[in-house]
Structures are given as structure tokens and as C-alpha cells.
Length: 81
Image (cartoon, rainbow, N blue to C red; front, top):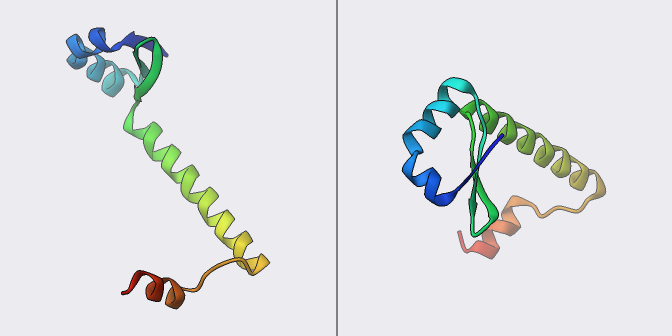
């Protein structure tokens, strides 16, 4: 993974984009010496989101089994919808 500071990333954004799009590279951008965000291929983002969805579904199923959930009607009343 490539690590760049914010200034270098700003000046070389087109190059960074091409390295990510065409080379599958992951680029970490630092601000004030600390990792702030990353530019990653869309496939990486899609995989991460699919993993998060799976974990959310598993957590919801476990909560339902434990009886620790709020039904939709109650939520709608609380939100006033």
C-alpha cells in the first residue's frame, strides 16, 4: 500500500486514481502525519460493504433469537411516522 501526505495526494490525484483504477493499488492519505483516509479499488469497497452487511444480518438474527429487538410498529410510533 502506498502512503502519501495530503499535499502530494492533492497534486497527484489523477495519477493516484489511475494507479487505483488500473493497478488495483490501495493508497493511504495522511493528514498531519496521521492516516486520514484511503483510496481503494471499487472491488475492495464492494467486498467491505458485503462483509459489513453479512455481519449486520448475523447480529440481527442473534438479537431476534435472544428476543432483544424492537418491532417495526414500535419504531414507527417513536419516529412519528
